[in-house]
Image 1: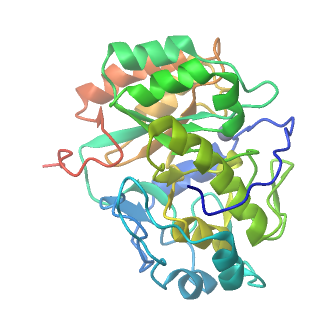
Image 2 (image 1 turned 90 degrees about the vertical axis):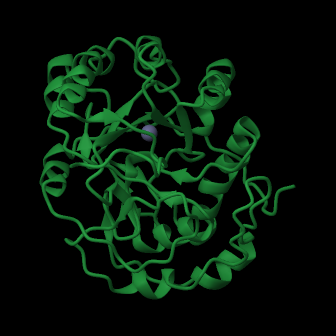
Amino acid sequence: MRHYSRQPENDIPRRLILTGAAAVTSLAASALISTNLSRSSNSDEHANIGNRTSPLPNAASTATPAPQGASLSPEEPAVPGKDAILAEFMGLKPSQWGLQLPGTMSRLSTRIAGVVLTFDCCGGPGGNEVDEELISLLERTHTPAVFFLNTRWVQANPANAKRLAANPLFEIGNHGTKHIPMSVSGRSAYGIPGTGSPSEVYDEVMAAQDILSDLIERPPKYFRPGTAYFDDIAVSIVRKLGLTPVSFSVNGDGGATYTSETVLNEVSKAKAADIIIAHANHPGRGTAPGMSAALPILRASGLTAISINDPTAPRVA
Ligand SMILES: [Zn+2]
């Protein structure tokens, strides 16, 4: 049973292009600290939430209250309805905008001896393909990863969505309904207008959550919007809805635009506890061969790919 209404999905012909490698690199080099934001699930126990480069103005005041009915039952977690979200967040003004806001998970929190691989499947025109070479690589090498699935990609690739969902090594994350930035004021990223209100933020998350909950038979725990951009109010809404907003600390494929050599170079730079973003919906690009070359190098340096929610992950000595 769903506790929210859906709006019609617009099939927006846009494609995520992440070009913020420089900003990401500098952020990845920063020592990060945790904020005091409340956790709406226990799925990010070893997550580093937020970073030291941003002040904490409105985010703290909007995110501190404990989520309503934050049951952790995997079958039917209590999630605030749309009315409750609007009552709490309507009229709040965002004060921050970016890829790694406080309250988002951009790295793991402790010096875990591993990295987390995340692959977005963005869907939509030009984005509905399947990188079979990449997925086969991960399957063949038993490599854990998070796949952030957009509604449009799931609908275009039901068999592959089931295939990913059926593999216990793969965590399925929510990559939104229309694949747009998360804003309460319509702010744009890479020319893509974001959600324009708390209501639209709710719909962007929860319509996809509905589809994905059916796919994996439980609600996804992690959310990354199209473009990965958030404002601070949207971060708080996503957390209130019981999801951990996930960003990244290493840009592995530049929105699937990098050559295999660049993918290899960027991924090989990863350090312990990094979260690497790449894509699984652009076959024939540099992502699969670059990852194939980079993963053995990471392993040789003690950085195996680990599950995003593995509390037993090995720690750096
Ligand atoms: Zn995407």
